[in-house]
Every structure is written in structure tokens, then in C-alpha cells.
Length: 116
Length: 376
Image (cartoon, rainbow over all chains, first blue to last red; front, top):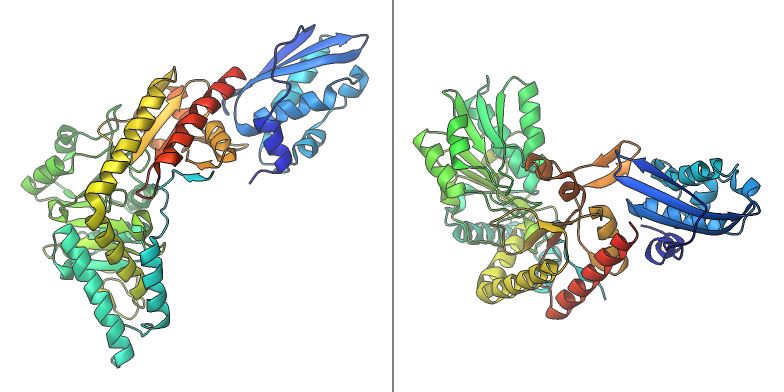
């Protein structure tokens, strides 16, 4: 059973949208069938807008939305410290057997690497 | 709205069955093996149930053995038959698409020295009589071929396989868990047949095994010698009674109910036709099953989205954990494309579904497929 927070993220994602981005990166977990692309618009070291596209399990979609919520409006120095625990808390999903939620985190770090 | 479309997993017990069971729990609670009147009252109901079930399957009451469900029936049939007749090994034919209750038994038998051929299905989900014939060896002693596949709903060619098995003197068992209560079955086509109560509106924890009088089977567990020595354990009178009553109710309403479910299936299939890039998995399927995949949407994701709309369907392929995705062995055996395997959901209709539920389902299905695809 998923939490209400999880349901909100999975069913009503606000960040699955088209934006004018400055940086983007994709992460694929082929063994899980998961693919996440993160789009960032970075201005003056601040994430001014963020979006995602995802094909994957419900956890990957919810995690992608959670990641976007967590980093929107943040300075990139703060975004660098984004980790699995932050995302799990935002999702209210704590089953550590599922590592697929790392896909959007990796995508953000990969996109950010190009900004640093 | 909550809509249950997972009747292949289990069914809701009919109200009338549940009510009658309460009487058995509270009024006819005697041990059917006891000689006093409490026991004999229960025994009478138990034997009546056996007779009704035997009639439903066109066999003799002495050929029906009550068990705890499909898994136990499959185990007794396969292991009990080999133990009684071929304890030192032999060749067995089964299929790659069996339920684990058969497949895992076959794998264990291989470890014990038996030889097993697993027939490969066509991409439409059925094994062919020709392949069955080709698999027969001089030392083939048993075949176990399911009547209807649980994931795809594909009806297997039991009648043709039965003829071939008889020609070669091979004993044929069929796991008919998904068939009993849905299609009319003449169990005499096979030598042994397994069924499970909770798949046809009786409760969980009860099932039965048909064993033809011609076939010798030994018990695989020991105790008080119930069920003519084949299956020890105090008789589950309410379970047996419930199965017989549920089948009676289905028989009585069969034309109307099966017609309704067929209509619902057609309605869903025609809604699916309007959704681009889909694949219906399996052909010649039972009227209650639809197994369908949508490109760019994982089955687990769609099933979860439907669940969050109050609709229960199932998926055989799911991202299990750090081990990656657990895929359907049935769809893999059919050698479908990756997206069809990963994207499959199983919709299984029941006699208790309503027109409103189906309308709601088709509306939500197309909305959710569209929404999830837009995310990609």
C-alpha cells in the first residue's frame, strides 16, 4: 500500500511538463525498464524551473516528481546534497529494497555536472 | 467507485454461499468422521457436496477427493501418481506456462531423477497437440497440461491432447483451476483434474481433485486416512458444501451470467481497440480474461494507476526489488516482444461485475494509458 503522499506524486505530477531548459540528462536502468530524463533551467546558480519525463515503475515516476519538488527554486550548491533519504521522505516511501528511486537523483546530478 | 477485475486471482464468495456456510459453522459443526448424529449430519452434507461436484464434472462421486485447494490437488495428483506407479523415475510432459503449483513440482521431480519435457507454447499462448505427440517417449508415464492458463486465459487443446495421451497409454492430469466454474468441463477427458474453490465464488482453503477410478494414486501426507486414505485431515464440510453450492448457483445462472461477462469483455476489447499501440496477448481465450499490453507503459505502473482510481487488475511482471524486474514466465515462453511482456495487465471479469463498473473501467483505462504515455 502506498501512502497518500506517494499517491499525490504519482497521480498528480506537476513537473511532468515541457520547459525551456538549460541542462538535461537521462538515466536508464535497463534491468528495471526505467528511463528518466530531467530538465533544468538554471539561472545564476539557481534552479529556476525543473521538469521530468519518465517511463518506469510507479516508484520512479513518484520519485521523479519528488525530486523536482525538492530542487525547484534551490541554489545548485544545495541541490548537490540531494540524496535518497530526502527523496524517500518526500515520497513517504521507505522500502529500501527498491533502488529504482535513485534514477531521477542520478539524472539531476548528471545534468548538474554540466552546470558546474 | 471500487471495481474488482481480478477474478482470476480470487473471487468474492457468493452471498448465499456465505450465509449457508454460517449454518454449517454454527449448526452442522460435527466432525464428519464421528459416528454420532452431529457427525453424521455433517457427513451427509459433505457427501451430498461430493455428489453434486461429481455430477458437475460428469464423473462418479467416488472419484472426487476434497483438498485444501489447487496447489495441494496438483501435488497429490502428480506426486501421488508417480509414487504409486513409477517411484523409480520416468518421463513427464508438462508445459512452460503452468502455474507454479505444477511447474515447481516438475522441477523438484527433475531433482529427484525424473525427466521432464516442458512444452513451449505458440506466440498465441497454447501448446499444440503435435508438439505434445512429438514429446512422447517410450518411458513417458504422465502428462500435466493446464486447462486454461491463469495469466492469458488461453484455453489449451485438452480434447486433442487427451486423445493422443490415451493412444499412448499416458495418464493425463489437468490443472483446471481457471476453468472450473467458467466453462463446461467433462473431466472424463482427463485422468486427474485439480480445482480450487476460491476461483469460483467459494472460499479460500478448499479445493478438490478428480482421480479416475482407473488411476492409482498414493497419499503424499499421512494421518487419519480421510478421503479414502488419499488425503488425511478433518473434513472441511463448510468448504466442500460451499464449492458444491457455488457450482450449483453458477450452473443455474450460467447462460445469463456468461453472456453478460462475454458482452463486458467485448466492450472492453472494443475500448482497447481505440487505444493506439496495444497488444492483446493470447488467442482463443476464456470469456472472462483479457491480457493486454500498452507500449511505453509498464504493466505495474498502469495497474497501480488503475488501483489509485479504485480498480483492481493484476500484472505478472513487476519491478520486484534490487533484483530488477520479475517477468511473467508465461509471456516470456510465448516469446512476445519486451514491451508486451513488461506492459501486460490481466483484466479478469466475474459474474458479479456490473455494466456501470465496466463503463467506469474503460473510461479510466484510456485516460490513464494516455496520461502515463504523456509522461514518457
